[in-house]
Length: 144
Image 1 (tube, rainbow, N blue to C red):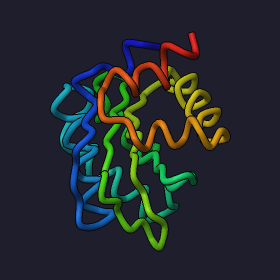
Image 2 (image 1 turned 120 degrees about the horizontal axis):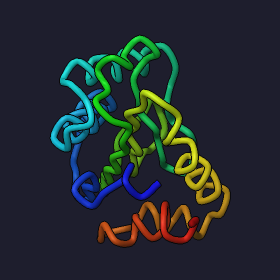
Image 3 (image 1 turned 60 degrees about the horizontal axis):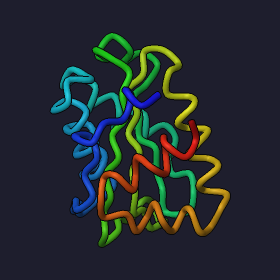
């Protein structure tokens, strides 16, 4: 599970003026770490237009459509924190966990994320994280 989320895919001081700008930035990070082809970013935006990826507690999980799997080079996650928040169709998003998945290797981390979001203290820790090691501790190390 640890190979899906690495320190170089964790960006904790991002800014975005809109939901789409935040999604685009998430996709750019997945491209930068070699997980996806640039076309995947458009698929992430298309997914959001069909159904919101906001999951509560200030967190969204942007990802591509089913048809975008050919743009995925390897399963990976990226975590972006937006300290100033992003208006996500009326909800305030502070953290995006972007998913690139051709398989189902990301499911365990999503289960960890669900556990974190059900615990208000842990959700607050994720929203407040300023060090990539804190994010890794929350999503991976504590769950292994």
